[in-house]
Amino acid sequence: MAKGTVKFEIETCKGCELCLEACPQESIALSSKLNKQGYHYAVLVKDNCTGCVNCALVCPDAVITVYREKKKGKPTAEKKLSFGVIPNADDESVIKELAKMKAITPAGAASQFGIRIGLAKQFLEELARRQVVKLVAESSRLKIYSLVKPQSG
Ligand code: SF4
Ligand code: SF4
View 1 (cartoon, rainbow, N blue to C red):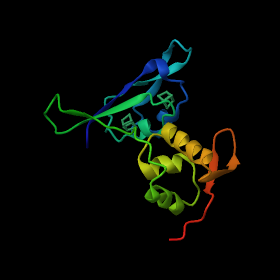
View 2 (view 1 turned 60 degrees about the horizontal axis):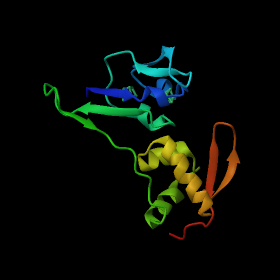
View 3 (view 1 turned 180 degrees about the horizontal axis):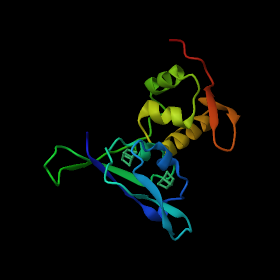
């Protein structure tokens, strides 16, 4: 199994626990200590991380960077994975991808475009400002959007 590790920007963590829930290895826990913002921050508590990146994708505050070993036995060969590129809202193929989604949500957009959920939220808000999508339902945890103009193919 691939070997990975994660680093947390502990001062920006809000202790929301989304990464704990997302980790299939149960590698993450909240520290008993508080950061400067007064939150119990996320820490790695087991040496079994596979570098699957789930935690970094769900973190709303871009706290987590995942490193993956390229090959076993090469101690310094680690790679920083980048999930920081917001899709170009002017690109028609981006709109076509959105049109394929049953419900346009931040989590869905994060998975569709391989970006962090925090960036997906910003991306959808930008599209709503441009009136490419509109907000159709909102709760305290979830926003659902739909395309303003249906795609013709
Ligand atoms: S990369 Fe995957 S296995 Fe490693 S801490 Fe994050 S969610 Fe867990
Ligand atoms: S998802 Fe991000 S903000 Fe939430 S506990 Fe994990 S590292 Fe902290």
